[in-house]
Image (tube, rainbow, N blue to C red):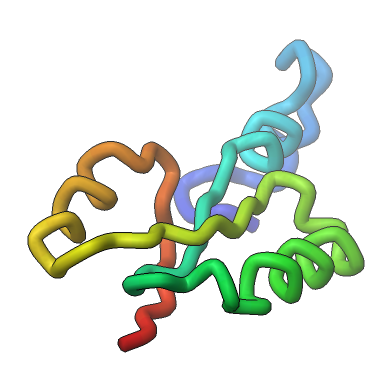
Length: 88
């Protein structure tokens, strides 16, 4: 059960696709931040894990930055970003 929502509300047919479907479709972004990270296996690994576990609304990307000053731009511009791994 979701906070503030009764289970009956989530599956109530008066909602076109149900609240549950809308929540599942919300895109969630994860990624790896670092410099010169094209060698990293993280994107392939997490993309496969998301697919295997049916997390179809999750995406994993590499955020290759030249210096730490670019980090704030990633946060500002990446809608739906919920988690990052950092490599040095």
